[in-house]
Length: 395
Image 1 (cartoon, rainbow, N blue to C red):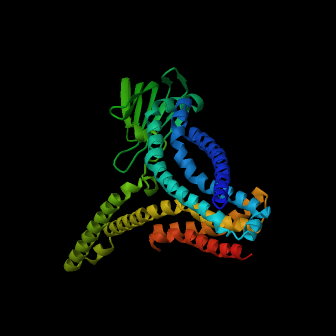
Image 2 (tube, rainbow, N blue to C red):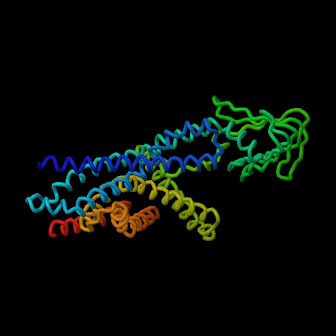
Image 3 (cartoon, rainbow, N blue to C red):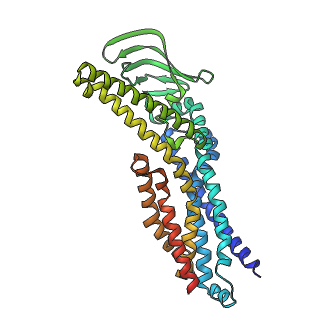
């Protein structure tokens, strides 16, 4: 009997967890696919290709919620039906039905940590690859439907699209500090993709080239302008620590530490030279301020790199913390209605865990607190769960 009871509880939790996880993950994937298709102008082929890569991204958010829902539903029903009272009358400790689910939550937490990393190292990277490889079709699709396409690097406006030919396109390339902006207008144009060279070529026929008002050139034959496929996608291309795999973080952090040391030595040498020559204005000059800004940026980036592993591990182990607080609260409330039980169990998480998580992540990224402060919400939930379990054992 002592073995049958824990097995029964775990099976009930797993059944509800699996059903809720499947439904919630499906809903999230549909929403993300719709948003991505709208923002990126994806064709049905690209939508089908990126769907498998969305699974880790969706499940790392849905697993903590669904394990809490399953636990609160099962333990709320057990307590509301006085089954726990019956067990205690037989001399069976409540831990008999609690520890197997705590063990299950521990396993699920490790799986969620792995999903957090897989979503970045496998999911997002392959989604980006599918989008980049299909840039030509995406651009044509956006131009056919909206008569315009824009990315952080260039934009296209056309009168219409006939098969693979752009009619009366206006193509604008964004300028930078080194290069002036360029605007191309032509009678027709065509897009060509070279996946081996990782380039998207825009071939214009009979038109004008305007270099940001500095020069204007008319061409009667063809003019070709190539951009990297990454630049043609609608993502900004900036790599954040949250987009890096856990295995890559230590090496990148070591590289930034070396750069910080180099900048600090460079600043110290310049300051010493300015003091020796009496050029005190140089200490607060534009170049000195630029070096200071560059140093602050690199230091902040290192703080973010240090925070990211703790953020992913703490997010994964939120599953265990949700169960530690959800199970005793559901038993204490003795409410057999699963929605009411879930909402009441989720309330301390909403009011305590997420504010502490956001506070810890923000302060750790800014370097005001050590990276381990990200775990503050997990620790508070675990302590509250321990207090609630003591109440459960007493009544």
